[in-house]
Amino acid sequence: MKAPHRDSLLPPTQPLLTPPLAPVLHLSSANAGWEDLTVQAFHQPIAYDHWLMESTPDLSLVVFFGGVMRLEWLCPSGSWNAQDIRHGDVNLCFPWEGPHDLRWKMCVGGPMQTLHLRLSRNLLMRTAEELVGGDPAHLALEKRMGFQDPLLTQLSLALWRELDQESPAGKLYAQTVAQLLAVHLLRQCSSVGGKIKDPSYKLTDQQVRQVMDFIHSHLNQDLSLEILAQQIGFSPYHFARVFRQTMGESPHQCVLRLRIECAQRLLAENDTPLAQVALACGFINQSHFTKTFKRYLGVTPCTYRRREP
Image 1 (cartoon, rainbow, N blue to C red):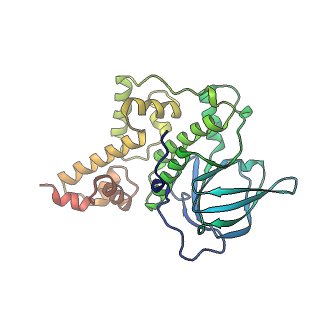
Image 2: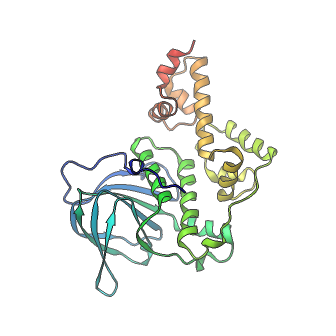
Image 3: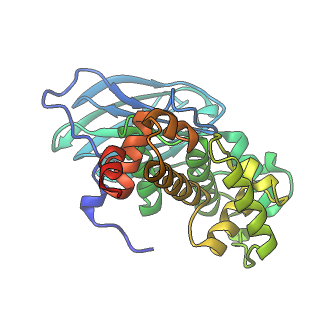
């Protein structure tokens, strides 16, 4: 995979003019209704002596954006390990092993921004079982610090930009990205990576009709990857992969396109209030509808309606 241009690796929000004295949380998926995935963005101070990563059952990814920092972490033996962290670096760790005490100091450039992703361990185990079988309890994962991975960075920034919109997409979007993250991490950082193969088949015409008919008739609902996959008896992972291979777009992209097309028809046909159009097409609220519509078509729903004859 070709590495993206550096400009595409910049987070959507810039660092604070005055560096904070402690880490500052400025974006979170806590209220987005996402499943299997939690995302938080932080402004980090130039130096910090005691950052405790709490123990959780989930896998943790931290992506760094900024200059160069000297990161140190306390080992169980009581000694400190250290590594220089640069723009675009990723740390992959397993908080279920116990709390981690961190400290750092910037060496080059201003304060960093970090994106913290917490991926459900249950999702990782389920995905491993679906892909290679066997007992997922014996899955071995490799802890890695300060490595570069263009795909992880791109997915992280896509999630960051989605949260930066203030009305992020629903669970279908988050589940799709979470599945991509899980499969990529299993491939790159686990003992089963070499056994994972992409599905080589496509959906039949009948299966496509079943899924599309269901989407059309439930467009105003908060659709999930599991619900769509169940319509043709697939697992979420295999459904997402085969759907993209067949349709040329992800399930989330397909549902979003159909919602936008539905909104265009309603805006052209009648004077239904925008709030009702939003709900009828499956958007969270009018604000989410307006921002998504403009991002997709380049104009607001009001402007689009005025342009229609």
